[in-house]
Image (tube, rainbow, N blue to C red; front, top):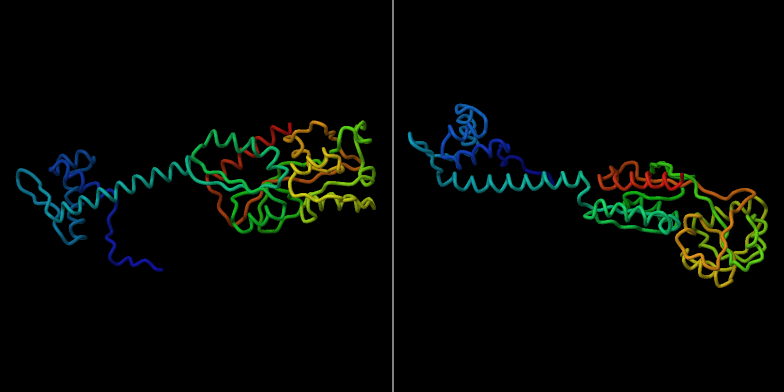
Length: 307
């Protein structure tokens, strides 16, 4: 809908303030002093306002200035407009300072279960009025949240991204093998994919980037892995491994936050299994101050946690 501008008067906040000052002081001279302008200039301002409105706002006598009926009505409108403007400006400043608003972060599960809770907690302490939403899922779900505009920013694998996505690198995420402490491989210092291929695996769904990364690395070595049980959450993965159902290959960041009693975690070598992680946003979407704030905190905490 096109706004009709024909009936909107060309009046600014300084002109409204001039009317209120005269209404308060009942004197052009006193109002001019308050506004730090000259009395003739103030008189010209009021004359222009009255011309625009086609009414007289003040009755002037040699002793005092009084509001007309139209003037009293206009003063009420001017007070409301200036108060609304004052509130809006304060709200915009608060928003720019990240005092209020909302941020939606999409994250792959290993990060959502790993470093992200610490980041969210620290941000909430600094900006308690910001409403935070975390959407955890597989890599494809994180990409779709950014593509569709559901999320302000995402943390995911960044080796292959569409042209519409902007990226800031965070570092590499290494994968480890997790097994029961009584497993025959547990005494080792490291394990290879060939050794893991002899064991049943508790794995994430085959549409997850973690699963595809693992399968691609195995295929490159001519190995076929035994995906015995498929789950959707890392917590379930750990529970099933602890129960002796098999081994699991999981990102190191996901291991750190779970109870590993009864479990042994080993690095995978020959070669090391890893993926690049980064912060992603939609290129054509302007980031809000709140989103920029949490993005900066993610990069800061991520870099110090990897030192």
